Image (cartoon, rainbow, N blue to C red; front, top):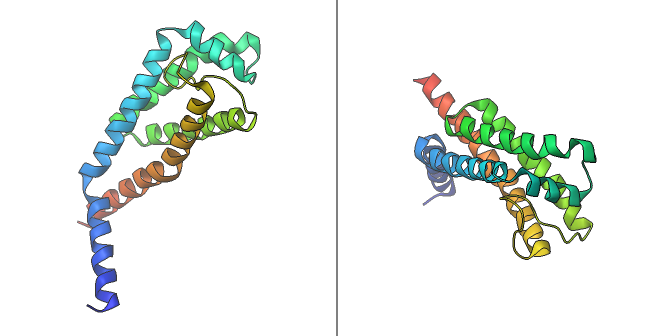
Length: 162
């Protein structure tokens, strides 16, 4: 088979995968569920989450209660918005992931022995968990989010062409 035919086949396959709504829905629903779960679980114990946040020493003491309640609410709202395929939910989750990567990276580079705080306080093996959360969020930000943006754009484009 000539190279241009194989390239065309790969391109056609990728376009079908990107335009097909189901892979994007599955990824979107899974990511939304993670953010909703993470937000709700932290809302059950905002004091513990505030204690986790304080260990990073990035938020002034007076703002800890606001951040400990506000951030999980924002995570939950972003997850629900993503669930309903609202573009601003996708933007908000992208911004949250970027924030988490920066904060977790700060913790990793500072060799901190702190909880990630991703799904509540007192996660096991603090430093290893922090590194794992950093790499997980980096992958989500670098691979999953572009996939969601590109597939959304291609689906909208294919609908407009019809």
